[in-house]
Length: 184
Image (cartoon, rainbow, N blue to C red; front, side, top):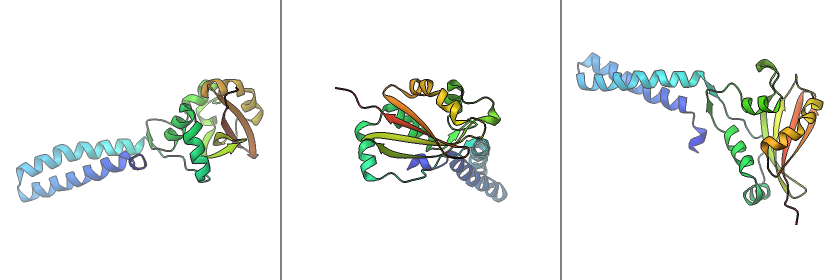
């Protein structure tokens, strides 16, 4: 639950309240409350404003996961799949876009203004394996370019990951990260 609360909002709220208390205390001649309010309130307010300026909102689920998929996730999702899901569904600060560094390392980000944009995600079962599907708006990087990078994607998000890319509509690419079952 706390991951869903933006840190910028906390800084703005607490800093704003303390600043107002400090100003009111100054007007009423209460030096102690004035100092506490202004010395703590103004920096918190400025910090909240700085965080708000660099805030990256969480990516939303396009489809809510079913209880079967959640059970499958808990049973067999890789640590990378879990970390990826948790990272993109929380507020981030100081990043330009979700997965910007990962896309650059894989070679799918020719320039900042041409980087594919993560617009959603969902979870499903693919032939009994847990699958995390990342939904990208990708007008500058074609499906063929994504498919050329499949070995790099699998290595980057692996081990035990198989990557499948599909174009669901023009400029929208789904990247399915499928947990490979161990062969016996």
